[in-house]
Amino acid sequence: MGVGNQTSITEFILVGLSSQRKTQLLLFVVILLTYFLTIMGNLAVILLVRFDTRLQTPMYYFLTHLSGLEICYVTSTEPQMLAHLLAGNGIISYVHCAVQLFGYLSFGAAECLLLAVMAYDRYLAICQPLLYPVAMDKWRQMHLASSCWAAGFLFGAIYVGCTFRHSYCGPNRVNHFMCEMPLVLKLACDDTHITQTIIFVLAGVGLLIPISVVLTSYVAILFSVLQIQSITGLSKAFSTCASHLIVVTVFYGIVIVTYVIPRSEASSDRDKNIALFYVVVTPFLNPIIYTLRNKDVHEAVTKVLRRGGFETK
Image 1 (cartoon, rainbow, N blue to C red):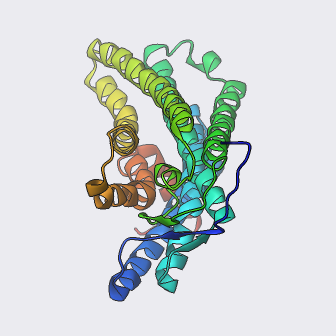
Image 2 (image 1 turned 180 degrees about the horizontal axis):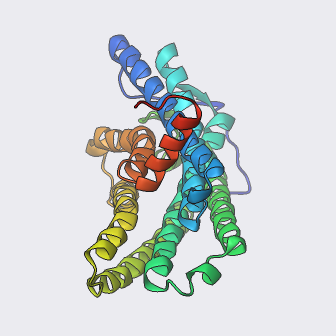
């Protein structure tokens, strides 16, 4: 099964989002604009944190890693989408499909873990303020962030190894706009039950642990916040958690809908629409969500504009 891999096909055909040429060109323009704004928005967050000393705290340190993951994530999928929309066909080589699969699964898994780390960071900051400077020092920040990246690459390598250890010798049409793992695995010519079990267990562990950390952290934060008497303190606690909670809810919600709820042939268009949302829209919205009502970021932007001579009286 896995040892005698006799893959004969050299490429996959991605069905894409639409077969209508006008729709393809319209999607190309919209996704290209969104891709550019996503890169610029996340890059701006990284640069602001890098050059403004007031933002050099654990919360913003992890936010820069989240922005870096978002940039890597969209770059692993959207350029290929744009090329297919412009060319009018969805042909992707066997190797390129494996590389794309490794990229978006690795960065997605790393982001899943990083969001849990960010929730733990908020728990320490709000519930254990005296221990926070020691518990979340520079070394600990680097250790946690690098562990998320390393674990993400490990998960990605295992998923790709499991998927492409099979033989692909028959149909090569994938009803998606990218190499989605469950759909590619369906095209295998040999038995995939063991592989599907391994992937299911790994996905369950990789999802259950971060969600447990997030839920535990926010339950503890909720109890701690309810004991705060000061309106100012209450407002500050909610403001530091609200944006992260929104991103966490959207991210994990989409992952559960996409990978946990059973699929059917009739839901293929729904799956593509959901995938379009988490591949294109979510990375675009995340820097906006984190900075829209963040006074620290607003002050940092004002400082940059002041230096550039753009401040208006």
